[in-house]
Image (cartoon, rainbow, N blue to C red):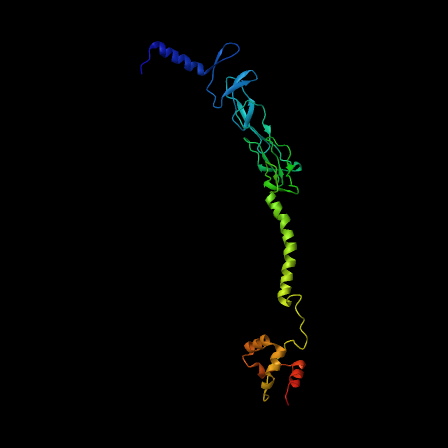
Length: 257
């Protein structure tokens, strides 16, 4: 690209202006471009110090003299022309705070709420205790370090079951126990069984013929009972001796001899 003499002159003037600062007295002073930008410092146009440093001294003819912030106690997170650094924040356990990240020369301390406490403000000065849901409410959202607990009313469906289940138990358990008792002991109006009719050990009869007493035994025991004895012992009922005084007495009365 070829420039005309006029264009070359304009370019040189522009470049000269980038490296020249006009003072209050009108005298041009040479200076280099500022890496972090420039600004006014005590009436002089000075280059800024980088983050983590503050200005010790500066004039328009030389680079500013910068000093680093004290580590662990002060910081500056931006380019500046400040005389001092900002103090680091201290997390106070008295207001339920703890340190999340420690302070550096370019970043302030970051605090957070301790467990069971929250703070929903950007600039948090104190943390508050998390809310506890009252009776009739359940937790919808758990408490976090930045948000309180969110409660909601108990679902009516669950409330209905909470009421119905105890009632069903109160009704169902007695009925179940009553049924079990019925199965074990029979119906309440059943005829009580006498001691003579209670089942005792059955002993096979040896050398005695009870054939003539078959009808009397059937009358006393009944056909159903006779069948039960036969099915249980697989022997003729007349071949069994029931240890029952009543049976023997009635059998002897019907003896033709």
